[in-house]
Structure formats: structure tokens, C-alpha cells
Length: 284
Image (spheres, rainbow, N blue to C red):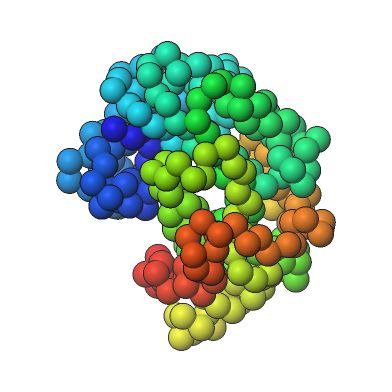
């Protein structure tokens, strides 16, 4: 049995689907009931409600598990969080393999507060004695979903740094790489940097959405202060600052197109246009 945390999110949902299609029993862990989400869990998936900031909530989810996909997200930054404890909890439960969704910034911006915290979790995993793999994606294509309402109601995308691009990665690619790491021993003990196939700016993303809609989408450039105010409604201020630092002035490592999606999956990563085509209904 494989435990998937963040199972109702952009990576967790396709990962849960991929694992069940591979014949694996899956326990899906999330902070919210599945009914709150548009996409239900596949048949046969066990669902457990748990907040990873309170590690005791994972105990029942880990019973009988052989592997764990660990996605910490906002739980990493909660004041009471001790995310490295999850590694010990998994080991005590008999889990033998953990695949950690980390961040590209751990290597490209190692001194950012959120990156320091994630590096500590990576280090705890390496020292645990468990089989492990670490995934370090850059920016997610699905971050564009934050524009869905403004596109629907105003025909507008609002974002900072409109002409500064990074190679955003499709969460479906992250999920497929995660599934491979959970199921295939060949990927044990490796760190994979996951990017899309091309550098794309927010303005170009807006153009891609407009092309898929067949109608104009106006681009409005936000100041950094405006963007941070919007972001801190959902993430801690330090994580907002770390993110804005990257998208304002990506360094050469953050502009690099990684070969790792192709190395694991044997195909090129999906371009942003592919993500838009699959999700265009949200923007109509």
C-alpha cells in the first residue's frame, strides 16, 4: 500500500490515479474531505483526513504502508510544524520508501527561509536509512489557475514581472515522475530537478490562454507589493518573498531546462500549452 499526501491537489490527484492504474492500493491523505473537490478519488482508494502539521494524524494512514509520497506544502511552515518527524513516523510504521516533493530553490536559493526548512526535511530523509528519492520542481504550470476567475469575469490576467520567464512544469509530469520513483528501484537515492521544456513568461502564458479560449485576454502587470499582498492570502510571507525573488530575477540555474523528466519518463516534459488545453474549462 502506498500513502499519498496532498492527494486532492494538482500533483496528488494524478499521482493517486497513476498508482491505482498500476494496480497499487492507495491511501489518500488530505486536510479536506474529498467532496470539497471537483475530482473524486478513484474507486478503491482509502481516504484519510490529516493535517501534516500535527504528525499524529498520520499514524492510522501509515498502517500497512510500504511507501509514502510526502508533499508538505503549507504544512512545512506552520508554527507548530515539525515536518522531519514525519520521516521518523513513517520508518516506525514500517514504510521502506519515501518520495519527497521538495523545491528547486533548495539548490538554487539555499538561504531562503522556506528553502532552509525544506533542506532540513531532505537531510532527515537521507539520514533515515529508508529508500528515498527527492523531486525538486520549479514553478508549476497550474499556478496559472489563480487567474481563472479574472479571465472568466474580466478577460484579464494580472501578474508581476510580465516579461520575465521560467520553465514552468506541468504537475502531471511531476506526478508521473513520482509514480516512477515510488514503483521502480532504479530511481532510489536520486534527486530529480523537474522543469518544463521551455522558458515562458506570464504575458506569454496569458497569450496561450487567449489562444485556447479563442478570445482576447488582457495582461495587467502587478507591482511586487500588489503580488505579495495577493499571495499572502494563501502562503506565509516568507514563502511569498522567496517565490517573488525567483520570478523577478531567475538565475541561470532557474532558467535551465532540466533533462530529468525525459530521463525518468523517456519523453519530453509537457509544454504550458498542453496544461492549458486540459484545463481550459476553468477559464471559460
